[in-house]
Length: 171
Image (cartoon, rainbow, N blue to C red; front, side):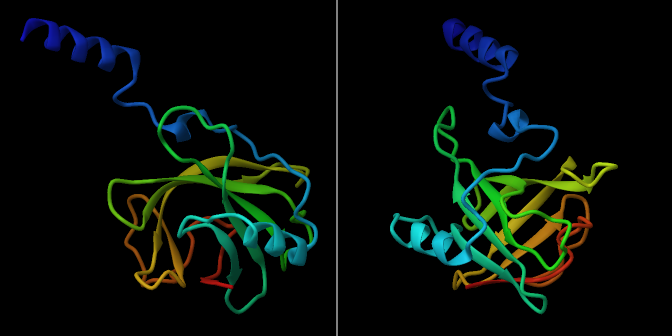
């Protein structure tokens, strides 16, 4: 029993038991190429095996498009996804801007997320990743965003950050 106790203490002290893959995301967003043409993004994603949360999502009522896809080469057993702007109703939001990251929780169809909640003074990148919970509807056609510590709306609810202020549905 003693070796097991020592092992658990060492794991806890090293951060293995408490660390999240989201702890290592950048403090500000980055911009990546390959997201300026929604048709090409849709074709690329259609050629890959996708998880339930992955795909091209449309913000209902305003037409913005956001891709959710796995990040290649993530460390450890946790799957990391990124949220990337494909088309925005906000002309200052550039295509390919990473809006946040998410990883599955222990509860089916729920994801722990860090969504950038502010813009830099010169509006060239996003900052301040805030903790959110993303829920995929049972039929897989809608997602909702909820800031940790706030009451949730219904599926397709409103995101708490100033960047994502609309509801979402799968394209």
